[in-house]
Length: 417
Image (cartoon, rainbow, N blue to C red):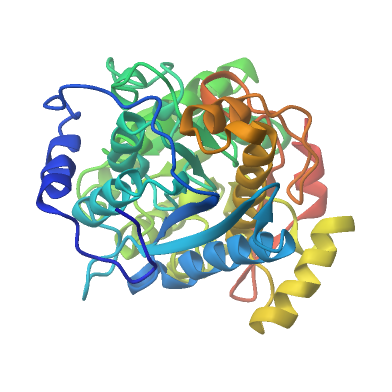
């Protein structure tokens, strides 16, 4: 079976495979670790939100992948490589769905020409696709899913990361930094900003829980006291109780790890009114214009966001040249998603090249990817470390200025390691 970019209907067996995969792929009777493609035509499959609320981010990621493939002229050694683009959002949907992501991953595994899968971009979507691609021993590279439970046991659920490798042979890697590295950068920022005591407001998803717990540990290593981890129920209903907790703890700083929605923005705005001297912080998942613009004026002026990304206004060398080509090709300024998408495709092509005459063998491509070392890229030099984590440590601190998120060079440099 082979994919095209418009192929959307999975055979019954693989739709059943999708449903099974969501519960851990337990019903599969065997693994295909040595699945080999049949020709010199290879495919890279990408899954991204190409409609709905995250369409712009998904399209930027795919545009970056297309540029990287074009730079290679679609050829790696003796192989021609094509890109298959699949939407992770169901028709009329607004965000990625478990069913659509599972179908995309199953379609990729079923195609004998596919040797790599780029995705997911949505937070936690990799939890759905990864067990499926792992059973098919298909290399999966995520440009931006930072959930550390995919690769590390610290602060994760008791069955993580093992549940994502049902075959027993890991196949995952990420380009951006994991949550644990993000927590370290955030803790350095709060120390630099003079925080004495921080209250952490956390959401209930697995990603938000890890963000809260890992930050608490990182803050202690920076000698910043932690007033506690305040769970969020209904943001509006909890505003008074959180304000009271801030007062009792005498916290001078607050980190928000909850949903980046209007309710969360209203909560932070209420807290800032109740405690004008309170310093506000948030991470990459909250660093959106919609969330920033929903904050009150005083909250906007106070809050600092930390995100794993280069400063787009100060790109140099190959990254600056790519930004120029991106504008010429797509008529808009390059964004972080495009940079990471470009590098995800680039390192996949490099892995295919290093697999050499064994590039038709999926296991060989995984092995080559996991051996990536001291790689110079448009997002910096990195290696692929333990569990598939990138060693990238590039972070940017963002302020809200005139309704836009603007990088602060001084603060970004202060937390760089």
